[in-house]
Image 1: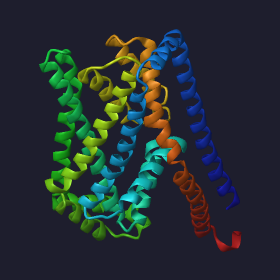
Image 2 (image 1 turned 90 degrees about the vertical axis):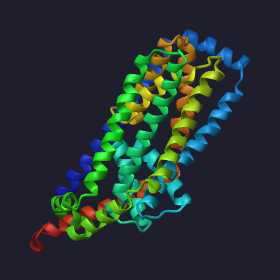
Image 3 (image 1 turned 60 degrees about the vertical axis):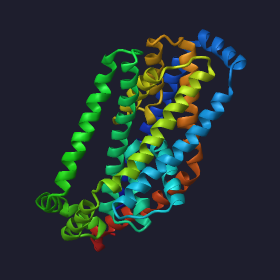
Image 4 (image 1 turned 120 degrees about the vertical axis):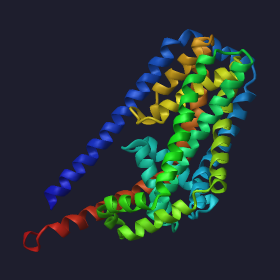
Length: 357
């Protein structure tokens, strides 16, 4: 048993070490990113001093709204599928999940898993929680595609940018809408629910749930797949994307560069498409900054201005939420480690014969 515990502890330490290495690599990318544009960064700082720094404070206010709206996306998802969670709990879980996804191995998957566990503690069943979170993510990404496609479409109609920039977001919108319809129809099919329940049956024992219980939960989820239940999710998601994009535009305005709505959404849509992929660095730190600055640089924004504006935006949209969520996240991590050790010990003892202990 001691040997198994040592191996498990070693694997956990390796995962944490890998996470630390990725964070260091990310910081290195950021440092190199800034040093390459250092001369123009200095001139942009002068522009900020002589310009309108109030835009940065408005951007911070926008990100506060974004943080709250993001928590309400998952709360609306749970309520729409028959679950429950208070606004305060949703905000706490959302912020802690955001921080956890940036500081522990597993990234976004780890943060989502922890959030799901917390929602279950609030009295929601595991299948309903997972289904509502997946649906919320899907609807949120569809909302992003709607916002980006609409903004770029208006700019194209006004002759501000080329129609080629509609290709990516337009295709993404079609994929998400089409995929959502297909998944909704599958969940609404009793035959599909029965087959899915039989497939995941063995894994349900961890949740003290039978295949029949799981199928019943899926039926409840299917019965709640109605437009009126999905509209609040989409509304909060669209609000979160709009205010976050506005914060990005305001940071550029603070450094004396005003972006058109279409140009703003080209870079914003590309950045969030990248952030939806499996992370190579925590929160795509370093990669996302270079992508945003490079995109806006291609539209004529001076390199120094682009670098400082993007760094300022990431400060209020990435680092501030991480720091604010550290308190509930740290508490969750301590609790999780303690429970994980106890769970590992119980499982090991269950498989080790009494005579060998």
